[in-house]
Length: 65
Image (tube, rainbow, N blue to C red; front, side, top):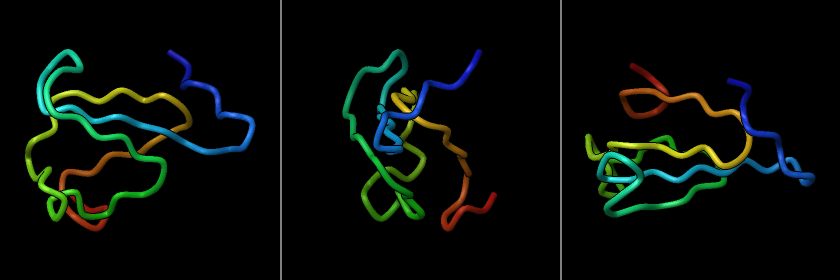
C-alpha cells in the first residue's frame, strides 16, 4: 500500500489511539514526538492512523528501540 500523499504544504499528520480500531483516547501530531511517555502515552498506543506523509515508529524514547 502506498503512503498517503503529502499535503500541499508538505506537513505530515498522524493520530494515535489508546484502543484497537481507532477507538479510545486519541491525540494528533504534525511533527516529531521523541518522548510520548512524558505525555502519558508510554506503552499505551494500540492503533495508529497516518493521515498524511511518511512516519517512522520506534519502541523506545528518543527514536531508539
